[in-house]
Image (cartoon, rainbow, N blue to C red; front, top):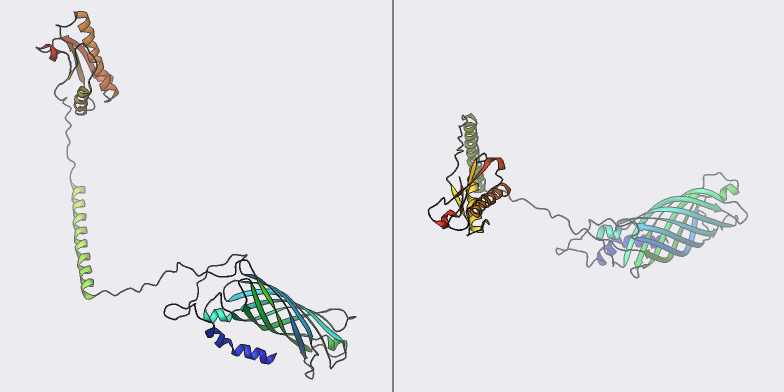
Length: 372
């Protein structure tokens, strides 16, 4: 087993280079993270295996006879290189040189794992062989024969896990492990209680990968931008531009100061009402046409806010009776007043209304409202 462990360590550099063929960039450099953090349910695994174990006692280098080793593990990879597992390991052997019967050991262990293949050669999901050193500690329950009570001891362990990829969810493993714990055999023989036992084991089994079994690199890594130094001409041009902007800024500050020191100007508002306007109507009608509305709108837009407006409604006497003409004149003046109040916002109290007949010398012109 020692020879196997040494050979495994010597093969690290070979496996790190020989297995590498598709996780390098265009320049041949190894591509490493950063990797996206995996979810809680990703990259879990269960390991089941069995093999052979033997032990060495710390008194006269006595060796155990050896026997069966079984192992069950549950673990998770946090990054392509770092993981952890908890597990149970059962060992059975016989101390051949001490007549104490069968030695049984049950260990509950916590291991921290380091995938050196991914750490040194870059993460590669399809790599066939990953070499994974680990170390841990735990509790140990041992007894030296079937009638003895279980004796609880502290145990530390270390080893190398060789992981051979068979598919996305199944791997083959060869686990080489060494442990150190106190040996209860000596207490049973009346020997002082400071003797230790070093069981070593080699187990072969299967790893079942659960859930998602890979890692993704970040796709939004910001490239490093190396600034290009200024040339002398660029520096001088920038310096001159700064000087020009400073001059413009000084001129603007002076202009602002002049305006602030300037005395207020007197503003005169002309409240004179513009010249008169006329709104013409069809024969016998008091309805304002769209064209006349446009004329009235333009006139209203020239009025000051407090303007007083006078309306004179008219009809021609040559058509209709005097009573009808008087009524028609008043209706025409009212139509113009209503439009000035509702559409153009002129206060009703600012508008006076009167009526007349034949305000102009022709009948067509007299069908009108004069606004002034």
